[in-house]
Length: 299
Length: 229
Image (cartoon, rainbow over all chains, first blue to last red; front, side, top):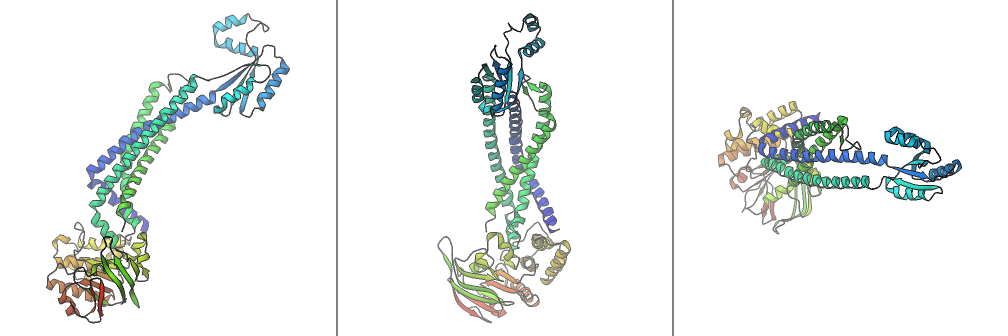
């Protein structure tokens, strides 16, 4: 009961104070708004980058071509050796015949050309398609497989994909940097706002201390005030995030440039992002006001 | 039993000024004590140490069983709830009514509404302001404002009431009114009162215990004393 009484009082005081220092509150709220919009764009971008980086990595396959003269026994031996490599997650085996059929399915031109080929003069090879656990060790694993007897060529998706993933990850780092800098600036602005409301209520705080209000009782209204500023500041960013991403997703039909870069489906992604943004807003407000009050409460 | 015990206390401010030298005092429960001395004698410093606005540099200050010097910042409120404080400048909140000003002290410590009501009305009755409950401090005379401040200080039934020059802003007639209020609180509630003042007239008329300070030294501690320069 006592807790609820105190909490009710604190919330009332906080709202009063936001209204009383309206212009400064508005300044803080706008700063939080701008920060959070950028934070939300950065969040959405980095979640998407992470999403398709993972998708690409999952898709990375080592293709092992066997030599032409390999017979069934040789294939079994190679299979055993591939199985024994610790980084191999799973593999599939395709005979020349299967490869041929698959290629014929994919293209009419191949279909016509390949139809006349007999097995013995087919240029195609038996292949293993190997998925691995640890992408960073892909080069190492590929080299190991290459050394196995009767293996002719080993190929994996190096090059372009690799560069793309690297580029995205550096973009991600830069956005993180910007976000952190903005959050710090906002915290300072909130500290100043709360300091002003504190100095407007200095007399009241002095009396509260004299009559035996605990430090926590004095602090809580200001912390709630900071949280309110954060909450108000996150309204616009949440709307921008939700509707902005929905529009973006629909405009691009769910992927960017190629089917390889899939966007995250809006639901429940936008709700999660909104929640994170509101959380950051409230937290920033809280941290700012708590550190502002701290300096004023030393007796 | 002693409510306050001060042992070998030195107080030296950060700017190098020493306000109190080797002070030893014991004040009994229920007593009414004046602390007198010219400005700079250490009266205010002594009062401030009693409510932990200042910490002694050396020695021990014990108020109602709490060692004030060792009290952590976070725990100061425990001491403050045991005592009431009255200042020369009243320190009322201008936007609150008389009732709200007194109730504020209890709201801050989370008291229940109906208890607040009974206690506030009792305190305002004790200081003779029951008919001005809904006035704002700005509409009251200095003497009345000080009585509101006293009501706020005693509303939580403290064992100790500290007064730092409570009559400093008032004319002699109003001052005597305040003194009557304080004396009746001392008698009816049994509250220990320590009052710093340099008003000779008051000290001589009240005939209470007197602590005389000079340049930070204790000169005299007399029962039924008078003001001595």
